[in-house]
Length: 202
Image (cartoon, rainbow, N blue to C red; front, side, top):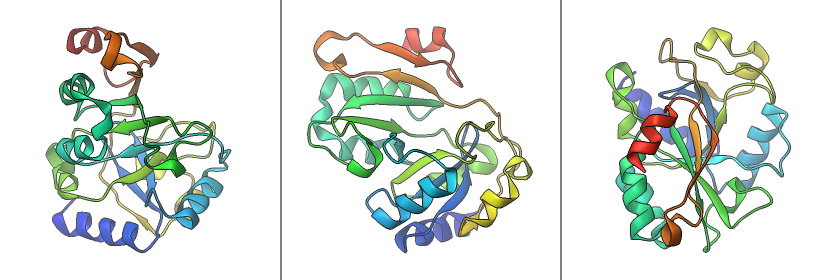
């Protein structure tokens, strides 16, 4: 991965494109989160129910926190401990930000900031938030290499960034809704961040 790859990815998002990209877990597919046609294309490509939610990914934690000011200082502190890393946090979204990513529940937002190191580090230069999901057909296996992504899926995208072999375990999903008031949280799916680390950080 290079800075040029990151810049091309940003341009692809800016013009309504759909792109396969490497994260710190598995390969994902992304588009501009506020572009209705791009989101429609992504969901159609995945054969995913458009009423289901997807996460919004930032490539810099400071930009992620700036985008959700209503989350509150306690939640912001927790997000800063968890991210960047292989975790997706469900947070309260009273302002209904990024509604196209929220499916049937605009009051909840899935937030993700990957930990991009080594060959993937240039991706951290991206300043464009994206709606993202795993690069597979709905219900299909997660992909750790580009070659594992179905050919028909890749051909439906405007660009494919190959970051080599990835860990292959999807992100841990944690529910932080209500954390601001109660400091209570719930594990939804264990993945790239083990439960014991999640407990320690929260």
